Length: 310
Ligand code: PSU
Ligand code: MN
Image: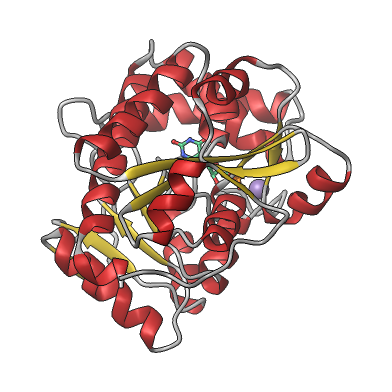
């Protein structure tokens, strides 16, 4: 079915994405913070390209999203993707930072919250990432990601491997419940813990689906009844997932280093991910890469399921 949504003039949308959205074809939004700040070069560029290929392999159009020179852009070209993966001056923009990035002409990678906002403006309903932001573990300094509140207001399905294991996951799930955000397990009854294979005790999901079609139907029903965002979470591929005891050791050390270095705010997540990659001898990096690509593939399958395209 064709869409009638007009794309706002402040938004640059690639010809390919514009045509796919207009035709009601499957399109998958991909975020850029994991490229610019979540993964080191050249793994970041390889992962971004692999995620795009995974979408195309199942017939969906990838739409990687960022702000380039103050211009919110949906559907980066190969050269734009490379610039984002290599330039040192790329900022990290959550939803609240978009206005500043536009007005001040910044290059900015978009987090889940900002990517959802721009995907929605372009008429894209399905989005793939690695792990959501959420409630951090420490009570002080208080830190809860804008990803959660964006899910409460913007009707985009976020396909991920749950929320990042550096977070307080039980608290993150409770906040999503408070915000009315469905947390749907894909072929699992337990909320996935990013690249960590198991969480004891298992964390609840609000529903389980076993096919892309069921996921698409659930999301369509949620939006039809006035709901906004939803989370579709699948576990990290088992061959690369990291055991919880090992992860906890690395995280304790990485958190100590973050405290000693006085890292706060938007810098916390990139700092911890980078230290975890080093402390694990690259194991978390390999797992992060694998789950991002797997989530892109699943998002493409869901986007291709009929009810989302209507
Ligand atoms: N998933 C990954 N790596 C990342 C992120 C997600 O595999 O780096 C990013 C997302 O952009 C998410 C952000 O929105 O981390 C959360 O940052 P913060 O905790 O500062 O809200
Ligand atoms: Mn934060």
